[in-house]
Length: 349
Ligand code: NAD
Ligand code: IPM
Ligand code: MN
Image (cartoon, rainbow, N blue to C red; front, top):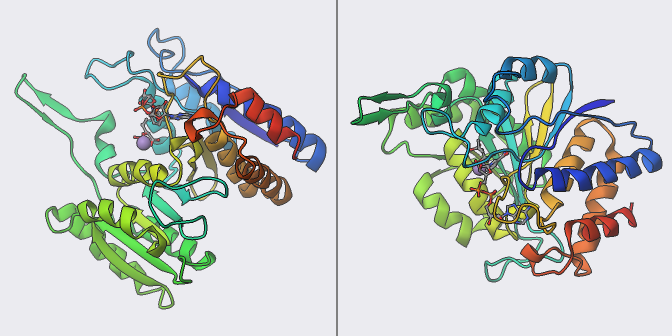
């Protein structure tokens, strides 16, 4: 099974290096036959016009799975001021129609939450991020008038909202519910203020009618930031607009140990792109101390999607065992380098 591998920028190649070692071992032990095909596309790549986003998308379309490390260099910017590297990420998500970004928020064994009174059985929910429209529709557009005003427009469509709401309810249906066994989908919007969000809520409500056994609740985006800190045990599946869910997913990660452990899966109906929630972490790049867990758990999500269930579970368990026995990188209070942490994973596969 050929998989497109994008090592990206900053800590990207370091954590992808861990994952590639792990994939080799899983191929040997579990017969996965994953063949990584590496493309070193990065934030500076399109500036000289030698390689284009169209070429990357054409290549990416040949695969069922893409394993992506973080990309981005805050110093390389487009004329409009946005980061060039993000044209790659958003180009892949939008043009491959990876409309559902699944971002689990799970307190892993051996990790302590900054929230008081919550153990690993109490924080385990999933943010479903609408990944194909919302405010990010404006990324390749937007408008700056003279030097006085700049405009980005939020797009919410019936099709986009129906499919992401359905995705969220289906995920809840397959889950064990929240800490109290309730299957419940939380719709996060600001329908009190913006018509586009009110439309999002209306369509979500219509879809919810097809799922009589699953509860739903509505929480405004601002109140949700408090809810995630005070009541994470009551959450099961959360669905929201693209940019709202982007912000909420970093907040969620912070409640379960930080960005270093937060994986994600960008899904279309046909394929998936698996990547950490975090970015290229320029502040620690090159030091060999990046936490590879988010990248490794994203790989586990990919293996699960490709139906290598045993390899996926073995990898997840190896991560849990490392963390439970105190084998951690510095972001989680440990002393291990990226490489040493990976060595310890390899022993457990
Ligand atoms: P970031 O996620 O890279 O870093 C935020 C903080 O978390 C930093 O202090 C960093 O050191 C820490 N951190 C992140 N991942 C870590 C890990 N694996 N181990 C230990 N510590 C980790 O966010 P940022 O600094 O806002 O963004 C840096 C660059 O990454 C920017 O160019 C941004 O646009 C890009 N970015 C890319 C993606 C992606 O590829 N999907 C996601 C987010 C940000
Ligand atoms: C993420 C990132 C991206 C986003 C950026 C880098 C395009 O923050 O994957 O969460 O905003 O979606
Ligand atoms: Mn983000």
